[in-house]
Image (cartoon, rainbow, N blue to C red; front, side, top):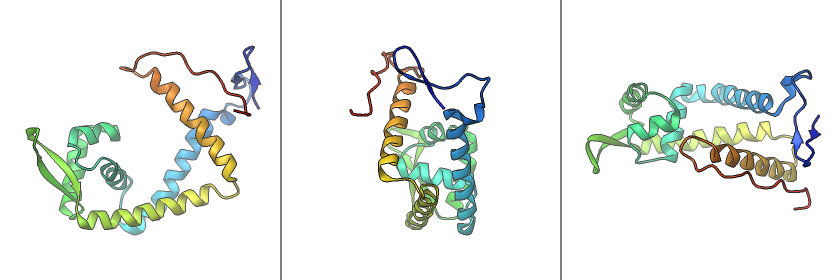
Length: 174
């Protein structure tokens, strides 16, 4: 499926081959299918995709202000404000004054929200187990390392990042 460049880096086949088998398409498809499966499971909790994504982001960035959380979710602050209004109304999230900016609020999960997140994490684990069925631990570790390197390469050239050369390709024995 892959050729090598003259310096022995893997190279995806050209577009004249089946692009749906490229790494980018596969990552996108797996992400979409994971999200769909998780959405199906999360319906039992009464959560929309937007709601569970906001709750997960908040659980990972508890105490963040709305602007920071909106950036993490890649949505507009006003969109998040409406979503937080709803989650606050259901008792899952609370706003507290931001000590650094009296115009802003920091967001926190309530006890009810934290309890719900335990169920969300359980659904995430079940979804992950389903997706990883038949894949060995060694394969998962190799895939994870490769994806982490790809992420680092892309972050290195992201706006605002210091541009540095990509690390040398390691051989399988490394």
